[in-house]
Length: 247
Image 1 (cartoon, rainbow, N blue to C red):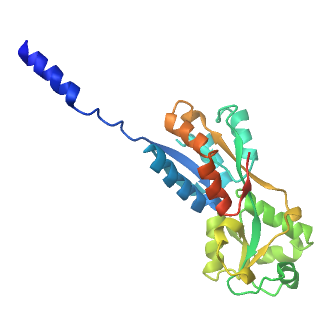
Image 2 (image 1 turned 120 degrees about the vertical axis):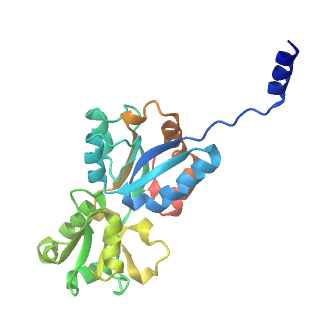
């Protein structure tokens, strides 16, 4: 009996074991790489839990999700796929929201883009990089801009297509294309002459929506991360990368 009392007394004096940190897999549109990494770090610092981030093209991710990829949260580069996910039974109804509004820019390390429209109309370059418009909303926006300027036919033969917006920037930085369309968030800090901010009236607003996927419906870390995306801390990071505010 004394032994039992001693064991009970010892148990009462020992500190409670800390809850084990958990991790959840999140699919993120490539344009949102840098802010997502900062937001994930802030989330971990606050909660102790982590998110395993995968970056790629929105369209490719959606295909993977429909084929059983284990992502619990999807941060898309458009507002089409998250809504589609809910309609087709892959997303949780009532969880879709706009976390950011993206901005398209023309970028070149070697061409003065003070007047980007004039550069495009001159056609004085061999290649222009654009993300796959069928998979990446920023690529679709780029094609809208060319159509708006009446340059689709003239510049289509010069287009180099990246799988996603990250590869598109790599084409430009490595010289495989002299210039190209990327997200403003990717070129923060670049000299002004290297970046031409495309007039927002020239393309449909890039509303980037998030959705909790069915695989994450009962995952508390996935739900917590979705809520954290709406927090002031996350919004400050999003705005730092020049995205427009969500809802």
